[in-house]
Image (tube, rainbow, N blue to C red; front, side):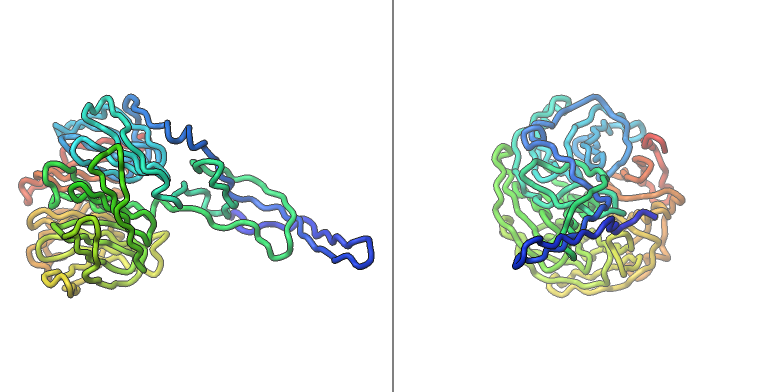
Length: 426
């Protein structure tokens, strides 16, 4: 096992040679740590580019608009896929966006994160995208994840944007008890959450799954800038993105979901409900508490569906589906809880509930009776890792560890897989 602690090589006592001088004691220590790799701000902020199609290696979030699938390549950019024929999806290009995890589309403008910045890109001509605007440093703590077995060296943000880490051996002198480093990282995985779903589609925005930290509401974009800070950005003019509001919450936020004039926020300890009648200034209405666990949420007219899972960041949790009555938006309460294997993203369409249950695969349920969901399983596609789904117009688009799967569910009694776009090496 790799050593998490530094190794003391020598202890040097430096005693002053002259009477009356103070003695100083130092430790010379050698340890291995994640050392930041910087890119200059100028190089970083001119790095956006479009290239020919690339192999999908580490797929992240998925978004759908105007017969195109936009698939995140974890921290690298976005694959553009022509999905006009879901049985034969075709990769047509790749947008290089360093540090990209999330996305949302309004009209012909794609909004993405790029490490510390929010970027707007004109995709009127999808083969010739043009960067239009950039809101700098709106995600100030976001950095890549390094080797989890080693501590992180202190960083100097004046040197540029951290785009990677290298494990190096460090030798230095310190005063006893001074450990010299601190954990200085933003964990991308903690932001793998939700955006618009089929229930929110209005023609001008796209459709995403349940696992993103971006949420569009007309000309406003809500985003989780930090796990405890929700920001509202006016995106009316893509070249001039303006922060209109910033709200701190006493929880660790993970996901956003909008239903009409309500914003549902999944956190590690429960669900928050915000009123967005005044869209530039969300106001909390109520909350629902649960055990500590990772938490995406989707909503229909009467119920919210929350999946809870254990994981690297979700200690002390359980693997559950919780059904929450939201008929009284000010007083949500749980109707029933169901055991799951390791549920991630989920989606709803009509009476169907789609759940990505981790390595247990895709599960489809009839949710018309919230007290009998587990007994009303419609389909189960086993033995492959699943992450998130988009149900739209009877086509289910699913992102998993080994690729993009699509299913025709126009006949719920005969759901069938129609395509699989594979990840390289899988």
